Image (cartoon, rainbow, N blue to C red; front, top):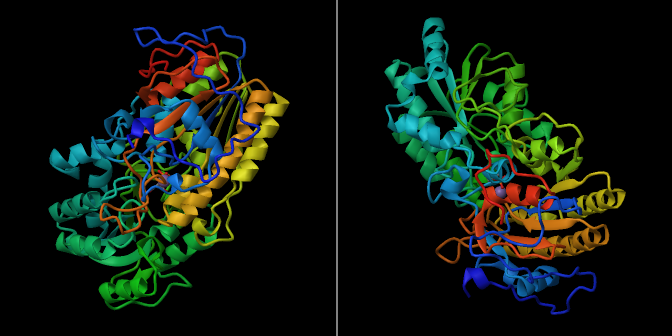
Length: 529
Ligand SMILES: O=C(O)[C@@H](CO)OP(=O)(O)O
Ligand SMILES: [Mn+2]
């Protein structure tokens, strides 16, 4: 079935009684401008719901959504084919063909334009001659040589490209060589298994060694890149890296250790710290973190900076972390949140902890600042399960209840929320759990849509990137844990107008503003759909 006409068959064909009317009635003129809601419309309440990781792909055996019992979404898709939005590659500031992710997805949704990503600037810097022209990195090696101190490079060591890239670690090693400091530069590799297939560390670590890396530790991103506030995870990594109390003993051969973990069913993302035969990070040693995406290493950076060791990070992970920054990211002005506030409307942003930074810091253009009338609500993420396939419902119900409460109270005219299940469970590679996640999301969506209809709010339903709609690698067998380049759907409920049939993530903010009766800022390059 063609993606543009995909309708996932629901196991149950009964339409939910609470489904609000969905209309495909309004016409569009030849210019691609759509009649229906006009600027100045008085409804002036809108909920933007991001169903994280819901890409739109043909039905098929690799798509758990085609087997899921999701009557609400199925009926929606039957009544109104969704507008399909591009959510990967250059429209979201990434290299062409690169899968989208929640960072660039929310950033593009909230700013209504393409924000060129640090990953592209870094890649261009490397191909243009390497890091020697980057003062923050050159200073690291100048200081180390002068003081005789080692340099420790920490970063995700894969070709995934969502949080960092193995080549960026390689480029730091090249710089070490230029400074004659290779012998004193050590790599603490974070194994991925989430943006690449689940067992690629053996290959990636071997690549690093080929590039001359002296491997000091290896640890899975589940621990090293925890962003759920699990201090125990972060502390265990700090202990392994610094040799503090609680550090595990030295593992002789990383190949044998990784293979042993594979045999026990532990894949790259979940590898416990492997401590190799190399110096630990001593007080005064330089630390360089190569991840460019800020959220993954934020907790570890905070913890290591607190030990007083000099820290250099590829981008600014947080305004609160004392670090030299190689590629600083400027705040973006003229965002959706700013335009809503400037119009005198109140807004609320809601997500569970796993995606809270996405609907706040990233959606608002790399700032933790709130506008007048802007509230943020963080719903707790489950911490009682080692992996979310064991709790595919995650915290979707609580988010739904908060949203319904907000719709009922009428305090905010603009509401934005993220429901993380399809993406977060998608990363576990567990096909059946994604099916269950989709069923939970569908039931929540039904209730949210009913509340939006009852309280007179437009509802825009969309996603930030694809993931859960394709749960097998190209071989048709290996479970896929990663994002996709699928377009994402966009539906508008509660308005007597249709959306344009296609667009991209930049178009969401102008469309929201238009529905709220606000002129989109000129800086937004997206169009009203
Ligand atoms: O989990 C993450 O950090 C990424 C994948 O690396 O997913 P998302 O962009 O959806 O947050
Ligand atoms: Mn994801």
